[in-house]
Image (cartoon, rainbow, N blue to C red; front, top):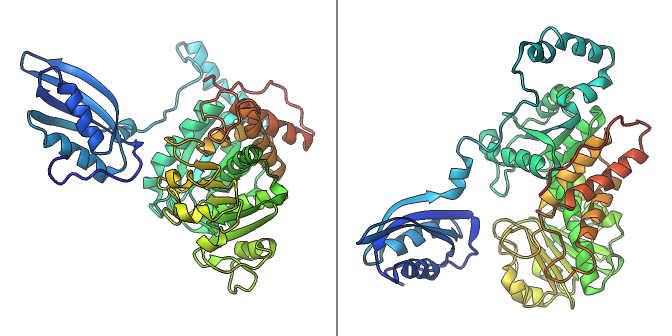
Length: 484
């Protein structure tokens, strides 16, 4: 290494991928020197493309994954420090992907002739309007309502970044809408609200609900998210699903089901420690308790939640009454001593490999904080039998995209009026079973997000549960899910 360039100790990710256009003296080792410099700076080269050349120089685009913006700058400096190398341009591939947004509206009808226009709009559309006025249920059959979901946020808890507001939340909601379409064939649209008042959010969502067949709440801070979801469920005749809660819980239960199969333990016999008692952590614990987990310790900013705590909100009060049977009140490293499972949905670098070593034999570690998990997965693997993260560049990625496209596909197909716990359990088992006994191992406890079997399996499971609880008869087959 040259100068003061120090390799990063963090894990590179495609989320911080850059392309550096460089001109280098043309000789047989030119490209090799470039890739070596990038590697020594701690980045991962994913592509090298020669874009121009002459007798003296080669111009190449070097694409690599870095750990963060500061690390990307280090990589560029490493290239600039090389003799005979000229850095001409640096492109952040993530920002390039977002230019102009990630989604668009397209028409399902041609509108190329006067005849088509007369049926799609006036005068023909008036007959359809009157039909819906006479029978409001026809809106599910004759409008986009049958296949459309609102992705609603107030921007108060965007990813792990905090309260960024509605405009900064929009790229996440666009991405969510794109995932709905890609994996579930569901038309979703971002609804980013410029208010963080609980009453106003509820009022707005209720007012726009006639357009949609479902509401997906996203990145709304706890504890307000609990009240917003609960009250909207009571008010609306369409499913209301808070993905940060239920999507995460479904995927964690699916992954844990298979992880326990790998290590030969049963859920009823294990002790689980959950770091983070916010929206995701609370939903995870409630679903585990519903499935009969042996015991759970919830850990958050105030420490391990236990019955002697005072001044708790309703959600934490519920948790202390249903978890931590031994009344543990110490710190997080102490909580996981002898525990079979650690699930982190909180903050980075809370534990070390030595802490994981004190867990029970054949321990399971789900360190899901993003982008940096609660414990370095490389260290955790030295001591735990199964390790999962939320990162796409690590084995066993626990990602909500395994759940929500199929869950909504199933609910929309069944014209469900609500999302239920039974649907969540069915979805989790469907995801777990997609892996198959013959493929199950410590590095494969969940299917790939690109596995084309996942969304149809989840949709079928949810649809079956929904149809058991309704007397409505569908007049069409389920909407096809896009092929991989």
